Image (cartoon, rainbow over all chains, first blue to last red; front, top):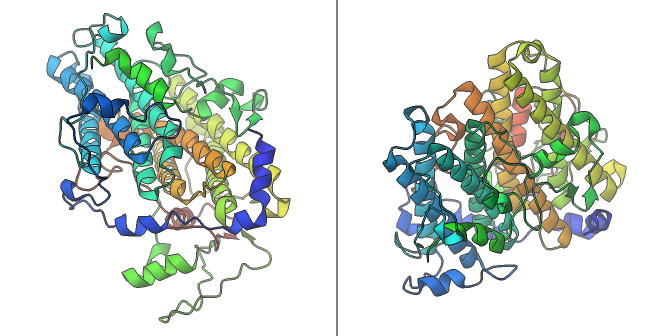
Length: 275
Length: 254
């Protein structure tokens, strides 16, 4: 993608003055307030039966541009994974008391994200929930996160950084619906807050330098992918070497988080999904 | 909140007036906090809004959103430039120094990236000029002052990008690129916000605290906010930091 070319399009006067029509849909949803019952979230999509879990989960995930419903189901899978991980972690006693506030906070947020996505999809708790195995056995690993705190922390970082990249990767697919796009962005940045916190507790920076990380090597894909975190090209322009006085290429990669595709995320999640 | 939205009071307050206002105009923005909102009366007449000839207007559509983001990044970069020149930074523990130098680096990169990107696209007359700021009200020797204001700026950045996403016209490839770029930047702003909040109150829930998060449709607070450009720009005006006058009559809004 050539940046200058893209920007040429932008310089076309007509496009500059064109107003987005997507805004219209926002009006009817803007009144969604704190007091509205979850079940009445007005943008709830036509709910599909939860009986066909496997089939539905597989549906659409291979496509480049998934439907809004597919994206929400994809997000639900991730949020279910995070919710169960933190619940089991808090129940296990693996978390030292000084870190309990942080992880119970994150856990509450993941609960709410699941609640929200279920309401949006018109589903019940448990619908479409995969069976998770946090030993990583489905991916050939043998981890013990609920007895070994460093492993728990490493997985928490991995899940949060993956979550950030996963939501980012679906922004384009949700762009046809202002409301859903905005809700997804509102979750996306909270995952980033979580990620920074866990990273800093583990002694890493809150932001991602190139594709560097201190996770087990099996989790390299969390920072890799089609557009790896080490990416230096933004909007078609190679920024390498342009910012020597402000941290250089390391800082450039830190300044921009990168997306993962749905398939890339599912491959990572698959390490912990039995079925 | 350090940024009190004083200007907000001057806007029409009833729901209908408000909607009409949002429909008819963007915010007029000048460093003094003065608005060119004359003629905003009871009737439904379209207000005549003109940018004074010596002032810059952010523009409409995606250009307006890019200039808007560029303005916010200029503010952040200018602020952190002062931070790393200040005496709090000079005497800070090395972990805090590294953190602020990193954030400074990121914000300068964001600022310069927007300048390059917009400049490559449109005539220089349509690129937001270099803005002047006055941070004389900020005590850069005070850790509390620096951290407190950093927190507000980063949280504001998150709300601003979250709100701008839906305003980007993605009907062409450029718009899709801008939406993704906004996504790439907003999560870094959120990482900054989280780190600064945890510096202020280590080990607490504040990195993603209930003071900043909201619930959606009845859930517990677990979602960042999304703010309209008008709201954000009014908050920026209210700080008094911004010295260069510009208008935002043509920004898409919600």
